[in-house]
Amino acid sequence: MAILEVRHLNKTYGTGPDAHIALSNVDLAVAEGQFVSIVGPSGCGKTTLMKCIAGLVKPTTGSVTLMGRPVDGVPDDLAVVFQDYSRSLFPLMRVAQNIEFPLKALGVAKAERQNRVAESLAAVNLADKGNRYPWELSGGMQQRVAIARALAYRPRVLLMDEPFASVDAQTRSELEDLTRLVHRRFGMTILFVTHDIDESIYLADRVVVLRRSPGGILTELDVRLSGERDQIATKAAPEFVQMRREVAQYIRDAGAPTTLAAV
Image (cartoon, rainbow, N blue to C red; front, side):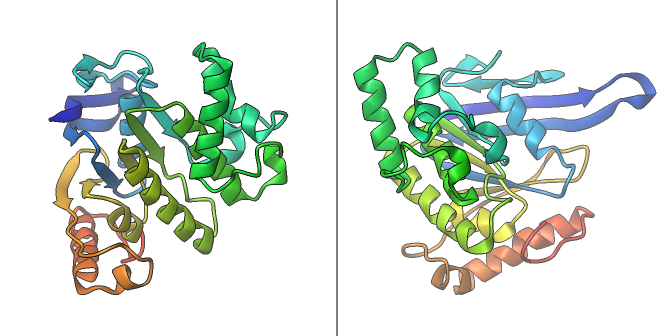
């Protein structure tokens, strides 16, 4: 059963001759607990789609439903991790305070807040960093804090909008593996926007490819990889290489120049 549904969604910015159609007739259904990656060329509407799902942007026409309820504003059962971790954290709050802040706003009791903060920090391997300030941490650690804050919220659905685009390759690999561990441990539904084809396949159960503007779904591919995923072995496996070629070819056929590593 789908926990999230997007139906006939269209989004246009502006009016008249200056109007820009960002998304056109998008239909998407995501099952509970599924990990779905969304890829596509720059400007195809990936971030706009995420904002519509998150209730941050209202569709021009069409609908988004979460757990059977229309999304009209930010849903209670959804959290977002953005690309720019440096702007999503409060610099004058310690790490634990950053994670606790939205829980206070929800009226969560102090003891429960402290338990959630501790559990979330442990889940992202930052159990000893609660008293540090964000600016004292590396970029990768700051993004871990952002993920921990989302986990503490206990969302049913987690949206991640190119969250690892600003970190180095080694840190990116570590964060990818962390995200898979978090997904398995907490069982939440994850939608993950990325420009990187390898990342989209490595992380997900399903890859959704958007066509170039106006954005819409070009195709959807189920990810079938055998065994535990490993940064080296999995990405060298024949089935992974074949799927990488398929995704790259779909994007190329849509008229978007690409390499095999990224779009």
